[in-house]
Length: 391
Image (cartoon, rainbow, N blue to C red):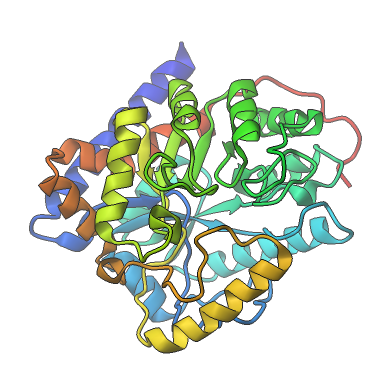
C-alpha cells in the first residue's frame, strides 16, 4: 500500500504542475511544460550529419540550450551508446560506459542541465528553468551475452532501455528484420533485469512480434517512446493498432515522433503529427500518449546545406542496412511548420483547434510521461540474483 500511495501522490503532483505549466502558456508560451520521450540536444547548424560523430560528442552551445528552454522543455531522453551495431561486438560495452561517463561529466559541469534519475528531478529542472537529461539506449546489443550488464548501466543512470534497433540482435527483431523474429530467451532475461532495476523497457524500433512478445512478457508496463501509427502511414517504423492497444492495456506509454514516417512519400507537417496523436489517443486512451520527437528544438537555418549532409547520412544508413522506407534523401526529415523551438506550441495549438481540451494537451505534452515514469522509476522491484560478474 505504501508504494501505491507514493505513486498516487507523485502522479497527482505531476498532473498539477503540468496543468499549471499549460495555463501559464497563455501569457508565457515558452513555459508550457514539455517532456520529450526521445529527442536530442544538438544544433543542426553546427552538427555534420554526413560525418561519424564521436560517441558522446556534445554540441551543447548557448543556442541549443536557449532553444530548448524556449520550447518549454523540462526534460528530454537522449540516446547514448551505438544504435547501429547488431550484436555486442568486442569493446562495445566499454565504449558505452565511456559514453555515459562523458555525458555525466558534461552535465555535472553545466549548471543549465540536470541529470534525471527520478521524476522529482524533472520537476526540479522545470522549476529552476534548466533542462533535464534522461539517459537512454536505442539498442541493447552492447550487453553482449551478459544480462547482468543491465545492472551496471542502470547504476550509472540509464533510465530507458530500447531492446533492438532496426535490425535483429540477440534480444529479438528490429522493425526491418527479415521474417519478423520473436523475442528471444535472452531478451526475456534482459527484460527481467530492466524490470528489477526500475528501468523503462522501450520497444520503439522493434518488429511487431518482438514488441508483442515483450509487452506481454514484461512484469512492468513498457513504452514505445517514439513512433507513429501504422494505420495512418504504412511504414515498418510505425506501430500497428494491435501493438499500441497491448502497450496501453498494460499501463504503458506511447510517444509520437516528428519524423518522415508519418507520411511516407511526401514531407510531413504539423497536421500529420496531430493526426497520429489523435489516432493513438483513440486506440490507447488519453492517459497513454505523449511526444517523442526523435530530434532537437533548434531550427535549421540553411536548408540546402542540411539536405546535402542528410543525403550522405541516408546513403550511409542504407549501406548499413538500417535505413527504413521513408528515409528519402530528397524529402526533408523535418516539418516546415515545426522547424524550431515553437514546435510544441504549434502541436498544442493544432490539438486545441481539433477540439482537445487543455487537460488532455497537458497529458500529451508532459503529464502522461510523468505518470508513467513515476510508476516505473519509483517502483521497488523484487530482488534478483546478480549472478556472475557483469564484466
